[in-house]
Image (cartoon, rainbow, N blue to C red; front, side):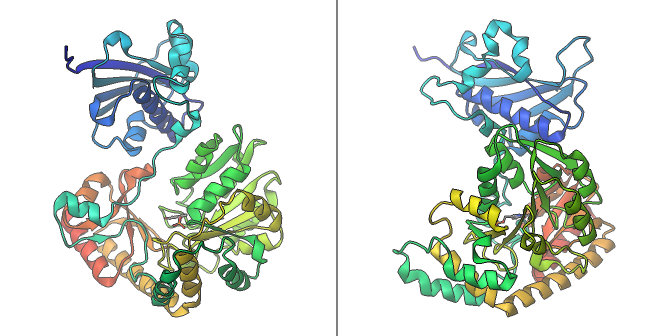
Length: 498
Ligand SMILES: Cc1ncc(COP(=O)(O)O)c(C=O)c1O
């Protein structure tokens, strides 16, 4: 007989080590994934999820993490429990209502971490069941459940499909509004007839040219399929379970990805004046700290740490720590006291500097970025690199773009002029923003930015809502062409009603 799906409840709980937003949102996502996978539930079959947290957790609600991790339309509800003497500390509980053909006694409830103690009847909380080979499914590495899927800026084509709009501008991913260097385009066009040949795995010509420019040794450069891949390669080279990775937040999400991928623990501190808090980081370093990332200028805030602060930090940093400066927006920086971090690489310090061709060079679609590291670090990272990780078109385009100084200068000028104009218009709208050393501006709307973001979408303007960064009243906008900036401001003025 055909059985119709019924609404059933899946129970779950997980504990966290610390009361931080990252720990709570990451654990909530891990628990949700484990509950879904153990019961073979698809997102569309979830009616709703109700979370509760013990009163000692107040850094964030679990629903925030689940929402940011991709359950964008599932109804979610979070609440805090009343204090119960002797109850398990730092615990997140969940009730997931699903539409399923499973009978209630076939449902697998999931209790992870210390929460397994709550259900001794479930044979170790049944927590491990989800991780063991099960019904038609190979076992998998538990640590990947801590990885929140990357939330990219909305592509123009998606908005076109969703809203039937044709006139759309995207100011969501900090791309170069002038496009790629025409010289890079010509170089790629010329290379197209050689697509049947593998790329040069060593990026020889690009390596030589860039090494000369930076005054470093050829093999001190590590090229990647975007600087994203260099971040991942640093994780693969250095991180093991038990290691700690230290960052400030909000920041670029790939540092968390590298830590979680390798089963290392991500520790987070708040930013200070919207930039990385180097003093705070120094104080937080312990013998387990393997890597610290410093996003400078920081994405999404655009603020930067200065030469003096970095000098001081590097005199005090213990030798067991690798310091990674992510300078994706380096070419846009105009501040005179911005640190010269490559000089530390030249001194042979345990420092890696990351840069990219995705931003001012306008090659985000080709995927190429690089790290600069002293030989003793670089030679280890080269071991984990895939043989042909940087494609042939990206190599020739990057070489041409590097040499196209006119395009870089025009891009910088456009950015500076656009930034000054946007500052002035934001002031007229009485909106606060963080002064930026990048090609984007972080704006404090002092209201739910998700609503503003949606209303901007209705007007064909794609920006970035601060919710993905844990800043629900902020909006990040990329500085565009003059026309794009005007259109953004007009739409924003309409939406915020000024
Ligand atoms: C701070 C930061 N680092 C790295 C990247 C990734 O750059 P790539 O395109 O080279 O992977 C970005 C992209 O937005 C970024 O903002």
